Image 1 (tube, helix red, strand yellow):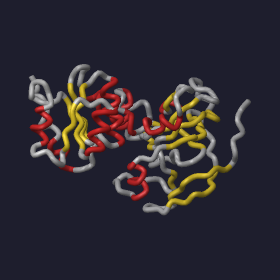
Image 2: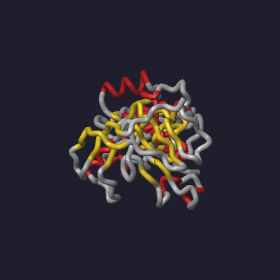
Image 3: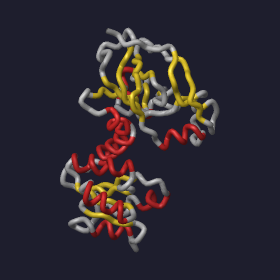
Image 4: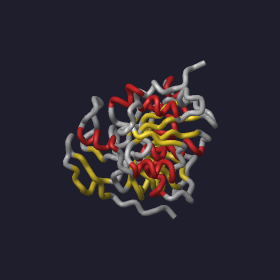
Length: 269
């Protein structure tokens, strides 16, 4: 039996750049031929949502705008061309809401570089609403045994660090240094790295984050950038050969770590 879909819904809406957000009722959209409608149960909040609200980036947002790109919920309607997902299935709304699927970038699995990419919570309305539209080709298919509240942040933060680790080329048994290891992105990165068989040098600051990285997330060593006299040398010293890690994953927000990121790396043979 098809679920009852209301005509209106509650959403957090930015009517103009810079806000304020308004919690108000808006119409529920109907999915196009290649789209699905997802009843959002949980949504994460990303710092990108603040950038979108404040107009910090050169790419203009749609207005009015419903933010959010970490939405997890249940498919309640779909277009006529969608035949690989069913009503009642669990699905996630990610940053990439849809792409052309035909350009060179899409054909090489670089969809974020597609010139026609639709961005959830930026160029199209996102997950800060009860019912959200997304292209069927780009939704995350979620097993029903996955808790929707737990998986929502993985749809952005998790994907971000997982892709970084994959593209680093680091192999099982090799070492990766994670800058900002004690934050939201960094804590997810450590879990992915260990699951991929990588050894982790955590770089962050403070006793609380040291304890979390070493005792809870399984990092092999911790370098406190605030107390270290030479972060690069201290990171290199944590590797067996003293030449440094095979890769550095940088999720910090300051400029200096970007300048230092390549310095501790093991030289290429």
